[in-house]
Length: 55
Image 1 (spheres, rainbow, N blue to C red):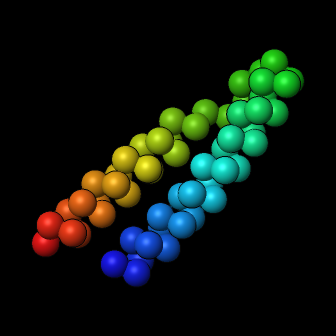
Image 2 (cartoon, rainbow, N blue to C red; image 1 turned 180 degrees about the vertical axis):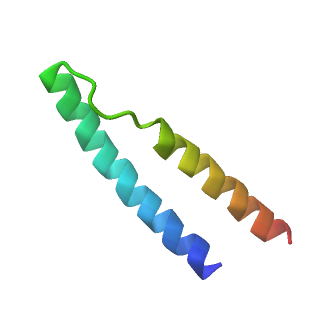
């Protein structure tokens, strides 16, 4: 459980950074970074947490 909490905290930090980068990309009118992997990471972490709570 502790490991999942650590990953969850890190994921929240990455979300904040991603928001900053998205705003910067909007200001620069460009798309440099694709954040799809971050969304997949979030979904995987959510599924692992649900599985852990079920077991």
